[in-house]
Length: 331
Image 1 (cartoon, rainbow, N blue to C red):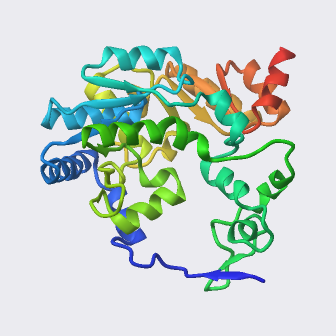
Image 2 (image 1 turned 90 degrees about the horizontal axis):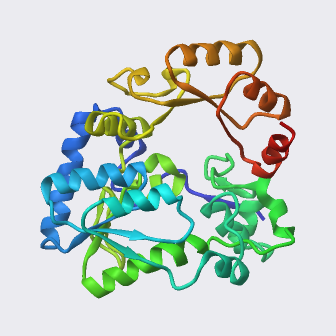
């Protein structure tokens, strides 16, 4: 039996059109709005707040904005043991950072619960999709329909085969290794988090912003996401304007795919990822090298991989890393 869900966001605080409008705002206006949301959050909880800090670009920007207003707000970093050494060293170089650790290491999480394959969303659907007729099972079989007769965007039929995988699949890795240590810190200190997630990162994060906005005061887990309406390009531009060339920054090419930028990306990016083969790939690599930008390529097939290497690409990202690593061994 097909399950039908509504086409709109029931009880939503914002519309998709409002989100898109905010995402088109210039960076300086976004900084102003984010600052206002942070002040609102800080004052509501009498300063008992903290920044969830991963050492990545998004939370680095958030921490900088927060501490321009409230210099004494602590940052909290969950050391999962999986971070790159460079990230850990960067975190240690930042002031007033509390390091928390999970009670279970990654290997144990895998043994007990399973692998977090593809994404948290897909892993969760597979984990709870084994019961025939259940909502998750229907998502994996493409049977969830919107009330207008179109398939739901949450269907993930392409991953249905993972139900028969010879290993366990679970989305609990992030909860156990990141969320639980943060939750324990919140309980012990009485502080509530400010988080650098953005609505364009996933459908679930977009839905959360549409429903709750930047500051979610209600519910069992109050949290602030004051950068929800930012884009990847905003973060990169902020890093450049604030820190100059301190950090290596990856962009995308052609630059036209980097929307709403006010500074020429060629000024600040160190590498750019492209999606092309053949003569177009040759042209792109040539143009990037002339600008002093390292060419990177994403998700190419076998021919595209060896072509990219020959053209001087220094990084290949791929949805099937095992396959790409086998190609690399042949170099």
